Length: 144
Image (cartoon, rainbow, N blue to C red):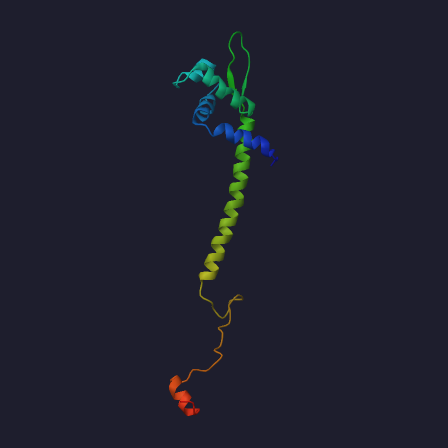
């Protein structure tokens, strides 16, 4: 897996943090679109949509080309793939860690058995128990 610079990931995730920009990315996943086509479902001005597009463009998630008087937007899958690779790698690492923790918790909750290598010996009492009460012990020793 190719390592993506942290600054690029920050820019990508920042761009995707906004619901309007995520909706634009989702629409562009269906195919190229003009600014007017992208703006249609939103109750905002074209300049506001253009600002969102600039954020997406700076993050590398979209590109704009020129076709006659139109500037269609295109989804750049490489930036999304880099973010997905990072997410998947971290998911794999954390899944392994949680699996190890789960196994450890099962191990420590299992009652010890004599044939287990990790069985701990039961500590012996330091002082044998007596059937006498402390006051009986004191009288026998002459301390009343």
